[in-house]
Image 1: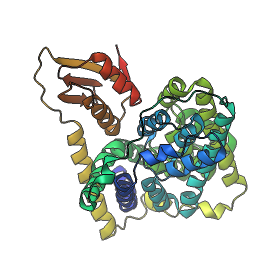
Image 2 (image 1 turned 120 degrees about the vertical axis):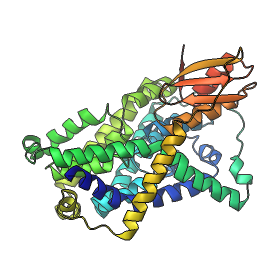
Image 3 (image 1 turned 90 degrees about the vertical axis):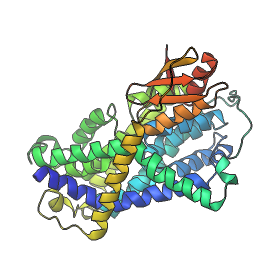
Amino acid sequence: MELLNSLLFMLNEMSPYILLGFFIAGLMHAFVPQKTFARHLAGTDWRSVVKSAAVGIPLPLCSCGVLPAAISMRRNGASRAASTSFLVATPQTGLDSIAATWSLLGPAFAVIRPIAALVTAVLGGIAVGRSERKNAVRICCQPNVENVAEHKGFGRKLLNALRYGFIDLVGSIGGWLVAGLVIAALITVYVPADFFAVIGSKPLLSMVTVLVIAIPMYVCATGSIPIALSLMIKGLSPGTALVLLMAGPAANFASFTLISREMGRKSAIIYLASIVVGAMTFGLIIDYVLPADWFTIGNAQAMAGKEHAFSLLSTASSAVLVILLVVTFIKGHKHNHITVSAMTKEYTIKGMNCSHCQATVAKSISSVKGVKQVDVNLSTGIATVEGEHNAEDVVSAVRNAGFDVVS
């Protein structure tokens, strides 16, 4: 019962802010043409890098979802510097994540988190820009075509916004959000209060420990928030919590491997180093420079089970969020029936981690000439394609979307 109470408390605290973030994110997706981003990000100077980071910070894309977006930007003319800046900044934040950070960790964390993401992304992008040769050959791309949504009426754009925000986006990060809440609740209830006593008094050691755990682990920006809160309750410093909030969503082995392939190992190393150095630097600033009372967690006692007063708004928001999670889960595991024939082929896709990845792969394959129907199974990684098509075109479409096909 204590575990359930802790889980419900965090869900009620976060759900109104998360739903608001989903809605705003949907509006951005529907009303801002995506192709306009890449047109401003072709340079390697600091202006393009800052623009790329500023664009990425409010976008609610998780670590796996940001990879196809960044690769698409790169192949539409964005420089390595701007693409790296986008890759560093975007998965750390997002409007939904910033709002949820405010609800659980307070305004100081909610303000410092995007600032840290911006600074880290800009420095990492500038470093990559300096490593690029001035006469580097730019990747060829098709002429820019404006987002189809730009030509739709207001009503259709609004429906598109609601569909993206409350269906596609919930499906993209919903599983990781639930995992983060469960892990946080387990830590809060079952980890002894003195478990982190050895490293809790040594912020630098605790930050290195969290980095070692966070870099190979995948957790989305929103899902990392309750975990960070539970670790603070158990004695770790606010700076250590920020390290988790930055490194957990932004750095993982899958991202590093794909960036190495698409932009070169040097860019990938700079990308990872900028996240590690940025997280450690801002973590130490929080612990040793900024006032400690800025990071006092008012929700700590409540989360630990001392208080459980739920408002009507938070309870209703939680109910709506749970319904959306269930609907998107069912939708993500519902597959189209494709009749097996001589024109049916199966492809094993590598790199899909969420429904956003699943939708991206399905859309890319559907654009191939001769493809009539596509079913992408997220759990098995198998894409079943019907129609008289060229297999090489399918492989190329999948790779252009930022994923790979296992032969």
